[in-house]
Image 1 (cartoon, rainbow, N blue to C red):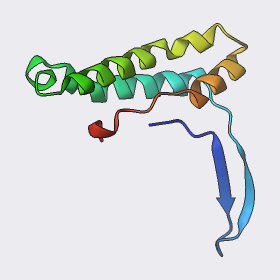
Image 2 (tube, rainbow, N blue to C red; image 1 turned 120 degrees about the horizontal axis):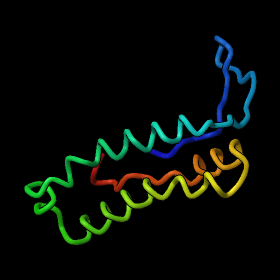
Image 3 (cartoon, one colour; image 1 turned 45 degrees about the vertical axis):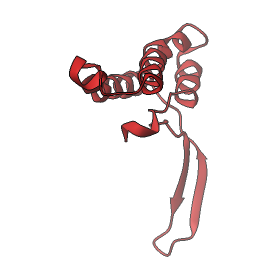
Length: 98
């Protein structure tokens, strides 16, 4: 679930009215992180985790660590820039999870 900052607004007839990039707030980034950690929690249960291949286990561990590390952008720059950088670098779940 990448956080897409690009947007397009359309008229009722389907013509494009406006395109641009939205700004994210840290609350949105953190709520997305919590949601993704909760979704992936089921795979951390021993009986589910043991059904994964070693490659899937590594992908899951890397993904969950990337979600936890997203707050590294908090100290990197000002609030808005840091949140936007976090959105631009928000990790994608392994394809087998969807």
